[in-house]
Image (cartoon, rainbow over all chains, first blue to last red; front, side, top):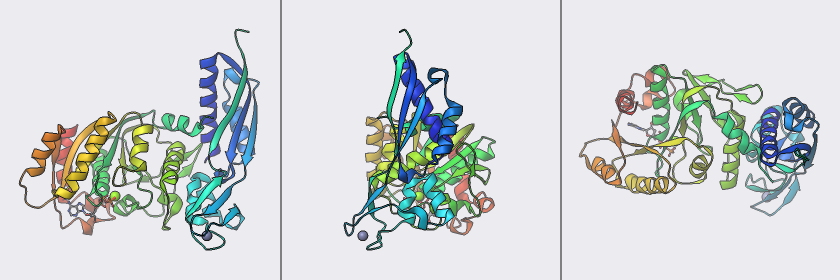
Amino acid sequence: MHEWALAEGIISKADRIAIENNLEITDIVIQIGELQQIDDEILQFALEQLRTDNMKKARFTLETIKAKLKCRACGEEWRLDLSSLDEESSEAVHFVPEMAHVYIKCPRCGSPDFEVLEGRGVWLASVRGVRKDG
Amino acid sequence: MADPRLEILERRLANVRKIIAVSSGKGGVGKSVTSVVLALALRDRRFKVGLLDLDFTSPSTHVILGVRDLQPIEDYGIIPPVAGGLSYMSIVFYAFDNPAPLRGLDVSNSLIELMAITRWGELDYLIIDMPPGLGDATLDVIRLVKNISFLIVTTPSILAFETVKKLVNLLNSLKTPILGVVENMVMDDKGRIRGEVDKLGVRYLGEIAYDAGLEASMGSVEKLKGTRFYVSLERILKGLL
Ligand SMILES: Nc1ncnc2c1ncn2[C@@H]1O[C@H](COP(=O)(O)OP(=O)(O)OP(=O)(O)O)[C@@H](O)[C@H]1O
Ligand SMILES: [Mg+2]
Ligand SMILES: [Zn+2]
């Protein structure tokens, strides 16, 4: 997924939480699956740029969850290695992570029919803050 | 834990006035051609129109439109390229000519990712070419796209219409608006489908005859605009606007 698009979603969601709970947000923890191919620096920068008044001093913590894949055909489990992909394929996976099924094959039997056990998706793991009314 | 992608998805469509999913319970009835021609006909009426291909495993609109050497532009997300005057988005920009073997959850995730990164900007209409049936993509657009309405395509065949009944039923139970039913590939009109559509309480929008010249127009926007198919759909559109 694109870092700026993601940052927009995170800020928008966090801001909504802040408004609904009357919070000044201090900490936001974001879990990112490795498959998302997010550049942490760009995402941090985007979050800094987009932060709202309800999170002026908030700290953004990014946690990457390693990707673990499992072949549905032969049962092989393996860790993601995107270094073998060419630039075009790697960019495609960056924008739409499911394109992994187009460009990655099981290292044992060559099947593209694998399951992403871990390391997929983006989650707002926690949003902490202090009540504005004290 | 909240999924921030859903948050963006809604914002991406905030400036799109009307979103129409072209759908059917059945495959091969002409959804993709209808989507493309409908989008082109709206564009000819000077509307700002987007076309989104959500058939991830068997995308076709790029072939119908003749999209070649186009790629989206990266700018705080993705700006769809323009094809035939339409803002155009398809998974082929990322899968290219390769097969995309996606299961249900992957389809859902691809749909969410693609719709979350795509910045349509201001549009009068966004036309969505749907995969056949009541699967993941259909359930997801109903779930995720607030102001969506459905245009249903059938053929005169009872086999197609039986599946359309199920689709109408599903949309009704999910309180999703239906613009009406288009009857495609009509050879000798007996008015049977029209009567059946009436019985469902859905609008019969009109028919499109079987057009032997359609195949030769694939890949060329100019040629498509000269087909009988286009003329018929243009007439149907007049009743819709
Ligand atoms: N009115 C028509 N006259 C002649 N050929 C037609 C007509 N409508 C559609 N076709 C042809 O029928 C075939 C199926 O059309 P199309 O791909 O649009 O169907 P679809 O419903 O999108 O299929 P799928 O369910 O696979 O997505 C195509 O080859 C198309 O050119
Ligand atoms: Mg189709
Ligand atoms: Zn395998």
